[in-house]
Amino acid sequence: MDATKWKSVAVKVEDHKLLKAVSKHNYRGPAAQITKMLDEEIKKLAVNKGVDQESFRKDLIDDFNAQG
Image (cartoon, rainbow, N blue to C red):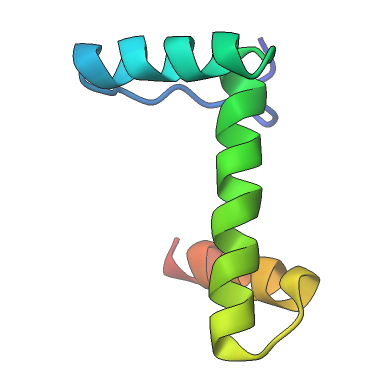
């Protein structure tokens, strides 16, 4: 697996079960479901801040990269 494209995260077993159940309900794999949930959250936060979604996404990534 390419570590520059994929990362592992640890979640509680109960949360993993919920993720799998929600994913199945939405006809997605868990990774696609996480991406969808992140996209929805980023959109909500961007609207609340009055900025466009792509700018907000870029700022989040830039801030993360700056923290090292």
